[in-house]
Length: 392
Length: 53
Image 1 (cartoon, rainbow over the protein chains, first blue to last red):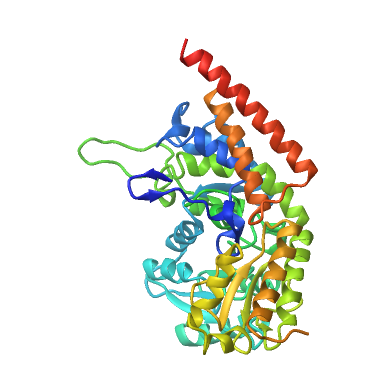
Image 2: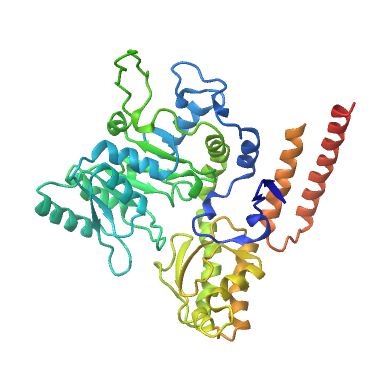
């Protein structure tokens, strides 16, 4: 079935359990799907845009209220919706980083943080994770001192991912932010894997900025996200335009340059808004998600030779595993080589791991029902048995 | 009425997601599917009446 020339209808999540690490938290709620149906047209949220003509002032649909709720929910003072977390990184980096400035991030940071620094002309300085793939406050302090010696200035900004995309490990944001503030370094909390998944209290964590991803973790269409700031920083990153055209004398009211004016003007925003009540509720039940993940981890660990590379016990549902000693031994002689695992998973109704991966790979159990988690656990064990692997 | 019908189909779609890949419906889910399909039939009936009169 097609929904346009050459575009097949996508039925991935209707037909299979999807364990793609980046897709799990962005699956739409029923309400978001319904909002998408009604608001698919381009500037669909602008029907009732009135002066001062800015997205976050629109009251019908209740976009203004949504912005206030978002900020309050994150315990920050102001919030804007942005086209993905990366655009939040970009806005903050562009505000604070000048050419040649050192900027802190970590050895587990997402590539878009590097790009935001690069675009602003900054120098990326990584706080190294330890041998357990955890970034600590001590490592942050050491790195800042090294930077001060090397560049004769402290870093101008710190990016810290609460949960990193490589291991799904939880890092000591509060401790690291405390160290950064001792050097007056503003802290950007990257909540791409937390905002919409677990409760996030920005001020309590010591964040000057909280960035979240709508399409990764808030059950919203892509590209969507949130950038929230403290009152102290909001006036800087959300400053309003001061430009005037030299011929026309035109000015542009209260548009915000870092936001490039209005940001999400249609289906992405209403999708985010429609999911928001469900997202606020679901973060309170992350323990259930960890229980589901635990069922799957237990099954994987029962397959001899399988290791979990992420911190254990798990604190997040995104997990990195090493099956070099189990599934990869099958791949060496299987007629499908490394593709046997994704192929057999697909045959059993599981999708989302990289085709060909049998050594180190990631998956995410977020959003599954208990029945689905139990089924997934059985699938891994049955593939192991069918291919002669031993289980405990 | 078009939206109501599409929203009913959306609810059915979500049920398919929640039960993938086996789509085994317990008694409670079967009752839910029945209600949704009954609603859909009514909505399609109304559409026929309104649009083909």
